[in-house]
Image 1: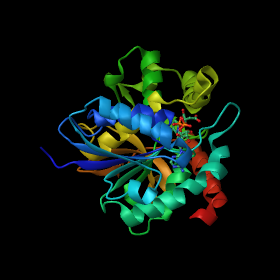
Image 2: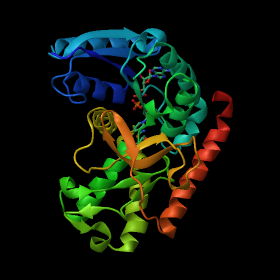
Image 3: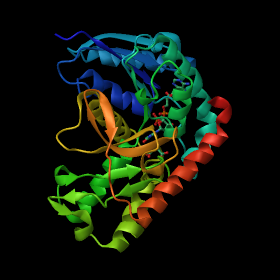
Length: 325
Ligand code: NAD
Ligand code: LMR
């Protein structure tokens, strides 16, 4: 049996946390041979609810689940953590944009970044899900000077998965046959789901769908999917977000299969002309616990315009939180 690893989930009594915790404990994130200690963090008023989550987790008698620590103390919750899912924060409601959450949520991530800096495993992998995810990840990363910026990421995998699903529905080709989807930019209305490198069952996606559908239906559909779900459910996406978070961490930790691409919000080192230091989504592949940006992709004028629009929005968000960095 491998030694247990520690997985922290913040907001573990919330909708996404609740959906994620059980799948992680069952081995859905790190594999069915990887024992886990769950470290669940909530704010004080939610500790009763968290106790209920802990009881249910114990009642599942998951063979891989070696221990559960439930706490409102982030210094305890991030102690020695190997994988940290930063979910806890307010979701938007009808009529809001995700950036409207910056003032409510941004201040959560500085202290959490510092606690990770001071207490986490030096190899910790951090995924920020709480919105606006990219800039919150930037705040956490900036407050953890002793941890490599490459260990902080933001969640774009839900957008990536949504894009694959929409293209699959349109072309009637299974999702497993869709390769090389790329999501660029921010987890917001400016995100750019890019099918120009996509292969669908061996054929280029561009040859299977027309440009008007791509630009006027597909792109807005993916960009606005979060709001569409809020309007339908009266609450923001939860099970699909938990699933995407698990996909993100699994692929980062265990590697992407063969030549598969995924999309991750990562700190920009200037690839594709994107400002250094922004938390920006690029297509990547993962191996041995690290990611690398897919290099050498041709970007036509439309792609450059879209990628730059999302960069501009992230630059504005960064300016708005400069006191937290
Ligand atoms: P929720 O309201 O159901 O749960 C949030 C939980 O976080 C609550 O239990 C709350 O008590 C807890 N919390 C609040 N502040 C906290 C803090 N400082 N420390 C620890 N816990 C804290 O919300 P949800 O549906 O689970 O969504 C959580 C976040 O994820 C929201 O910001 C939402 O917008 C975001 N989200 C992001 C994506 C993405 O793709 N990046 C997708 C879906 C949702
Ligand atoms: C989503 O994309 O579903 C989440 O970010 C929730 C939201 O506010 O859209």
